[in-house]
Length: 461
Image (cartoon, rainbow, N blue to C red; front, top):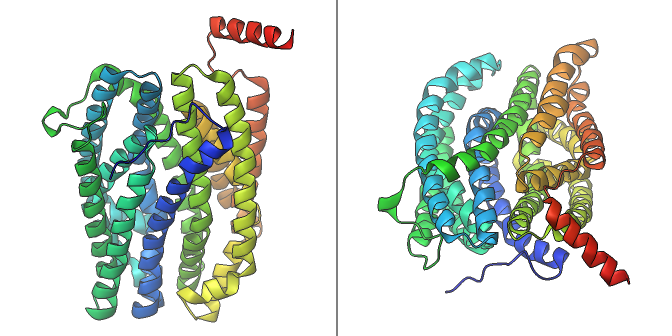
């Protein structure tokens, strides 16, 4: 079956963004689905302690993985720009550099994850009754770091050239496999937390194999030749210039969430389980917002590469409208059905209370978070990856740490802790709004600006 790539440099902007984003949304949905299946099946068949053990690992795993996934973002931006500029030689070198980065990153992450999991969980004040299971889950999870990063890198390459469908198909197969293995390992064999971890690793291996086979069999300029995998200095450094700040941004966000997770741990096992359940639920809204942000990043990369700067500006405006509509609609539905959704994970009234409370504080202003994500994606797409990193450092990470350690002790309640999320989004939005108004963020060459001005004058004459 031949997959047609979506050309984001032509056609009606909002339609192209939506067509490109929909498979991304479905891919993210499936990824969130099998993450949720782990927690839901563990909670149903292994109990609250096992559910809390898996839930307590999420933010820490994201923090350790985030930097290396950020590197794939940098590679994806350069691939999109070279694809838009029709630079076939550069595209070949970038694809093979990207896979070499993923392999090395996977090795580093596997080793670091194995040795750091238990000490970091202890630093987070993870309740003693779930510490052993949480540590075991993380160690198995990081054993699958190489296939996980290979899939993310390979899927990023395909999306950057306009193919968001195949990553969705591969993830669909992986997700179904993960859920089947969850039921087998946890409900039938009784492996508990370890069963959930092994189900995730095996499904990640399958996704990696599928995406690599797709790239090696491609008849295009971005075909992967396994024997040619190597780091090419010029394009590799260009990708790292964008990817390292993106990776640091992810680490900073996840790091601040780890601080909040540490605070959550202090409220007991039921709070940990409820917080984790809410995180899986609001994750279904996040996947839609993230898909639009990724579409925006690819859109910017392709149009900047093709020299279509005015189209890039219009694309950002339309993406912002799209993300507000999607976020507002989804959040309203999830808030309306928050109680039955919470009960799916765990019927314990205390766990249900914490789940619903987190959803209320998170989803009420999630549309604002979506706006911030789209702006960050646009800035990375034009190569200004340092800006979202610095905004994240100050307005999210530093603010949340300040809130937890300085403000929250004045009123050490669960609700006060949760306020760190919406307030950080408000602050981030204010800074982005000022930046976009005051700074020439779009890198338009002077001769292009003059040509566009002449075109506008002639059109109006």
